[in-house]
Image (tube, rainbow, N blue to C red; front, side, top):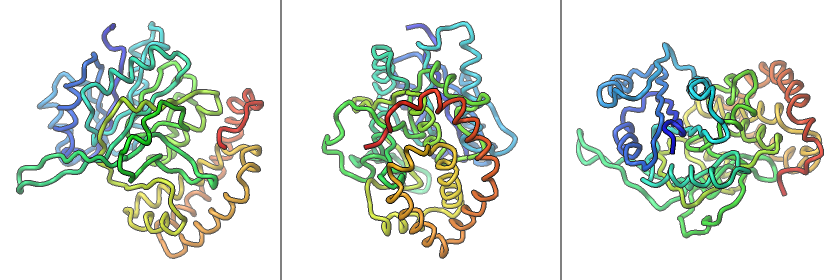
Length: 347
């Protein structure tokens, strides 16, 4: 396999606690990798640790925290520019969190699948959950669990985003190869030619989102382009998820889960959820799920009235509405309309 056929892009922000185990798992991969770290102005020593322990790794240090979306776009552009004269249909971009630990065969299995399935535009692995257990003040170890973190992104009938299988014990109930709506932003492999095609103004992830729901926005755009994301259960990794999610749950439990999240995550999640719908939801899709969507959004908004961070997110979404409507107009014209005769992506 030619060198640098796979670009692994990592965005670090106060990630020092996870970096040693992450790089240990990355070094154990059985395929050649081109690794780029974008450090979003970490103050915990993440950048210095990478420079000191992995000086061969390409690293871009931002002067401030630009968020998940912009930082990954920076790394994506670096990869695409390095492959300017290559066949991008056989080059792959891996979007990866630093709080991931990879099974030794994970990336090779994803790469082999993508090479043998040219109709696939992205590949989602089986993510299981992990957590750090402190032995003493200076020593910690990773506990890898058998609890599912994600087997791809899914939507409920009300268009509530959730990680498929999240919180369930892995009993091989998701061990079938199948198409999914999208890959989790924590870890996914994308065909470089598909990333280039799905990017708008050189942005695969919408930088106005900053973080959270940008992977849903990108996945929806890819689906409107007729692109496929395939879940590959043989590719396994573990994720130290800090913003917990669960599989299909009731509205009240979803609200309780949201209340338990940090305020800034609640703010971004509420704002970006509205923006995802404004940008991507077509009239055909709306009529398909209108009743469930309106009931859910009404209940969600009522619940936000006693959550200042969520309410603040709604006001921010309203403020940014003119910008999102302009993006929607261009998006519908350039991306959705050419594929308007395709059937809806949900059942």
